[in-house]
Length: 253
Image 1 (spheres, rainbow, N blue to C red):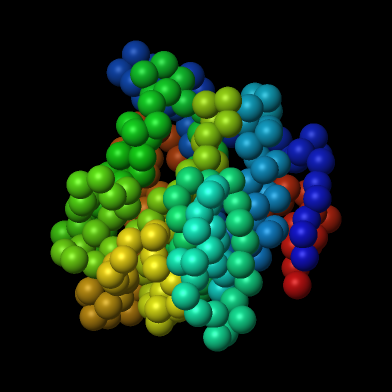
Image 2 (spheres, rainbow, N blue to C red):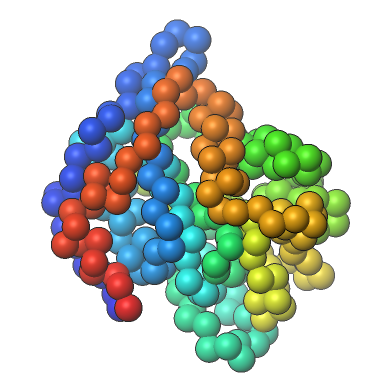
């Protein structure tokens, strides 16, 4: 169900980000680990948080969650890259960059809502930062990940483990990254991931050959994100601190 909400009703983040110090640190980052969230509801949550961040009513915030099965298409993405959809997975076209991707259970989604200032007003720099944060987190699980020339995202050998598709409005970021932890990779067979012919996906569990929980990986990811983007403090916030309880119910079903 589509969600419409008034961003003015967003509960203020109780931990607003500081301006950082002369060493380049950004100050405080609020992290909300939200569990499984319907894609439409998550998009409404992002939109509200983005508006509040632009207006200075909240600080920098990282929303982390999983989605039920959904295919998403970026701005101008080619629908022909969805080659089959036998599972009747919902399809959403959104205002991020990039082509088609899949989201589903077992995949860690990160939506950073950050205000880029000074030399950080550089889209390429921001994308490389997202990649670096994921590469750093994967290294903690003894996974040697890296980049590929002219291809945004993170790879382990010939297989892709994480995708990025971002939006920036008034130098404030939204949308973000998707990293396969214990994802059912068969769903990627229905698409041409990121529009890259022959692209094969992998996951943390496939590479390590052990069960890795979302909680375990998310804990490492938040620390890596804060380190790469130079936040000196991290605060955990709950769903009620991101949106009022009445709006949290709006996307259910």
